Amino acid sequence: MAVATLASVAVTAPAGADEAARPAETITWGACTDPALINASAECGYLPVPLDYSRPRGEKIQLALSRVKHKTPEAQYQGVMLTNPGGPGGSGLLLATRGPRVPNHAGDAYDWVGFDPRGVGSSKPALSCIPNYMDYNRPEYVPTTRQLEKTWLQRSKSYADACAEKNSRALLENIKTTDTVQDMDSIRKALGAEQLNFYGYSYGTYLGQVYGTLFPQHVRRMVLDSTVDPRNVWYQANLNQDLAYDVNLNIWFGWVASHDDVYHLGKTQAAVKQVFDDQLTKLRAVPAGGFIGPDEFLDVFNQASYYQLRWTLLGDALAKFVNKGDWQTMKGLFESFGGRGDDNGYAVYLAVQCTDVKWPQSWQQWKHDNWRTYQKAPYFTWQNAWYNGPCLYWPAKPGKPVKVDGKKVPSVLMIGETLDAATPYEGSLEVRSRFPGARLIGEPGGTSHAITPRGNACVDNRIADYLATGALPDRKPGRTADVECAPLPLPVPPPAPAAPAAAALSRVPA
Image (cartoon, rainbow, N blue to C red; front, side, top):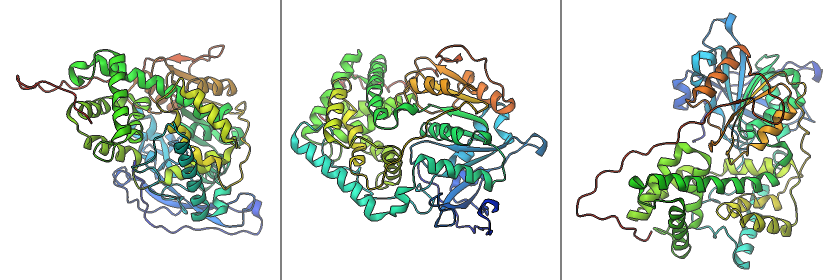
């Protein structure tokens, strides 16, 4: 998703002699420039917050915010709904438009507020290190030779070094989850709200957990979709993802096979997997069109592990690639998914993950753990390892993660698909156990990540009821979901156009 851009607006910063008694910084709202925000009648602005909260009178940075105000009479107003899309590193400005997706107009009673977290997107300053770092012509992910391993380690160090060179040391030292959580409370104060409602996705659920731990008195209602396991931040979380990504890719192979009349890639899961593996072998030798090598190929199809909504798009792309030699479609998807030439989200991702907690500093441990994981998950293990590789060399001092404790949070509604790969379901069960006021909607067999509300009435209507009245399902005993909903039906591809009678489909080299 493209970063929304904000109109430049004035921001006032009231002064006061007594820091404790100072009024909150204020936001001067103005026009937005992103078309989706304009269409939603949103307003945009900036909020100054301390770069370092231990020095509240020191340097300030600017958080970019967006807001779509409530559409109900004041008597029905339910307060601020702060949102976060995850990442870390995701721009949240467009989430201000999400209210109308909630059924039964239950979102209309809230002011929906999106923001770009510190370092992200339109917030100032924004991080960037090497914009084209994830561009074409990278070394193959799987380090089958010592030279490949050495090259990736050098690349990882070069990225970390560039982050140190091109960005403020102070920002790199103050971009942890706890800093963003402090920013969330600054937003609350600036909006004049005694309590926040919060809707968080993926990493955003971790922000919600930490906010609820540190500021439970300021939590009203909270929706957490696809929940991070706080026990595994962040090194182990990535290894857990690797296993789950491969499970879901193999599920997708089976789905492709079930539609062989459309895709013509094989009638069994094993047959489609073989076709996929054959393409990887060819691409290691010769990148398709000079652009699509094994890295780009895997980057594109990692999306199959995230979202069933993209299965038909990916099935079509693979069929065209294998059966027609169409690498151009694959190139377009790589650039669309990767945000070619913009490393802001990636830089912030690393800045947060590498400093939230101390990562193992022994490459031998990384090497051992990733090769061991690779034996079970050969597709995405090394992709993920090198994505996080700069944490070995990160130039800012790591902190210690907050011990998540939700005992004082009044209510939380959680949603999790049981085969979600990016945030494995065990994380939802763990967080539910730490938040006695939480209820979990489980979707058995679902493989999608962070998509609510998206037309699943069983899920969406419960979200609507919760936002409208605070109503939650009864809590069941034990480590389990409180309600189960079937996930959305598997997508059905459009039928393939009829081929000319004399034509025969044949697989051609990519």
